[in-house]
Length: 105
Length: 131
Image 1 (tube, chains in turn green, blue):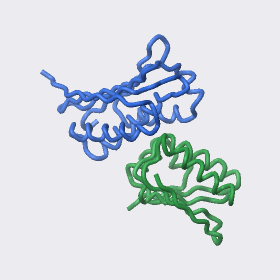
Image 2: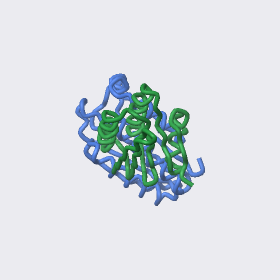
Image 3: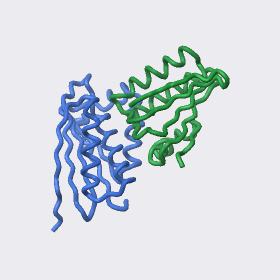
Image 4: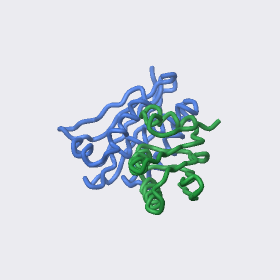
């Protein structure tokens, strides 16, 4: 798993790029990075998943936890460029209704 | 008479070995003849089961996976832990476990807990072709 991030002050948004595989091994790192970003600016987050190959329930759990914190500050999390087979996981778990989701063409 | 190919995998119950479980599952499901989308489903379901059974607090040292492939019917997969785990404790300790089981049941044609004297010993699942 690899995470890069950039804060866009004009939109007050963290732009995060998430790639590779998020599982029980890498999810703690994802949690640590996202919470550290919110410690700096508790703003909305846009996560680009163009190169995300895999995410399981541990990764989804991290995103849910971070979303709670973002929503407490009236922000949101947008997830874009999801591969269709990963979007399917968000759909079957109902998470497509609480995150703003955009599927990869 | 139905013939089944069997593949066995035993790995330490540590997060870093989940990748080994996923790679093996993908390879076996591919050899069985599933398509790309079905392979992704099986890989995620098995990975969820592995994560579900992995419980270092309860002294689970290793996970043992058995894949049985029937090239006309589908794939049967058992994921067992070295130590039985109290299911109630498992659910109460980890908020992801319920989500994890829901994903498994959604992606596979059948998922069953292997209970031994009130303790969870493993998870059995199967997926049929075109299921």
